[in-house]
Image (cartoon, rainbow, N blue to C red; front, side, top):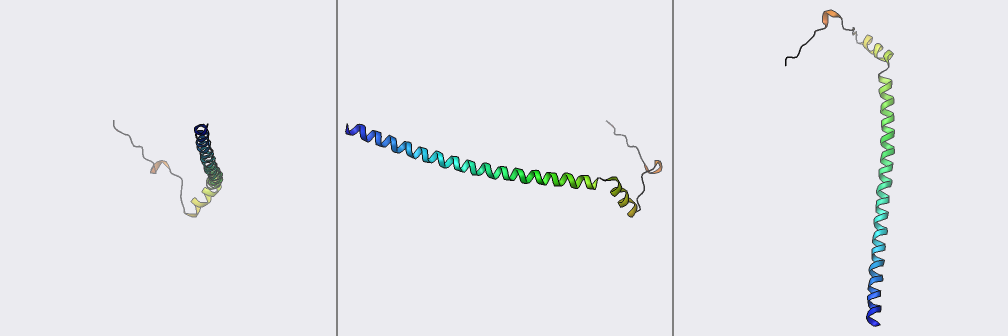
Length: 87
């Protein structure tokens, strides 16, 4: 009976350590998941800000004003060239 009790004590101790180890792993994975979710939110906010800035910069009126300010003219037939690529 003494050997059986010692064996059971060892098995319970090993099982307890395994439970603690798995709980710690689970906690670490949860922390990593939380960090990844926060990073995802930050990236989504950055993407939305960049899309808004892109839309603002692509505004036709803004482009036209900038072109007039720099004295730019639209390309005409006299300053347009066709290039052919040889195979």
